[in-house]
Length: 95
Image 1: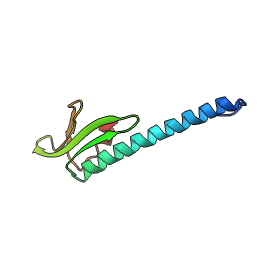
Image 2: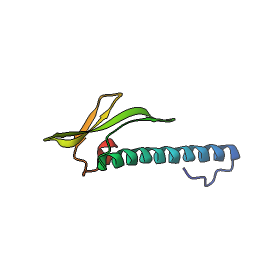
Image 3: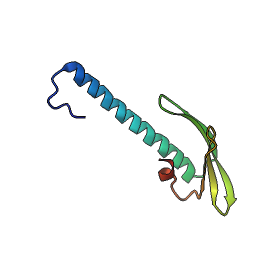
């Protein structure tokens, strides 16, 4: 949101804080996606939990050799599974 034409200092401060919060949320989301994608691509078997102001979920990456891929990402809270090969990025599937 643009600050052009806004002269009320309280309104400007609200807009600045709102914009900063949006940027923080986007950076946080990108970092989480990059972390999970890194662990996936490097075949790191892990059980991890993400807890912060916006997210609270657990996930597990484990090897699983079958016709649908060589790894499974399971979200422990919802039970949703993503199965695939570690040499493909799963970042788009996570978004």
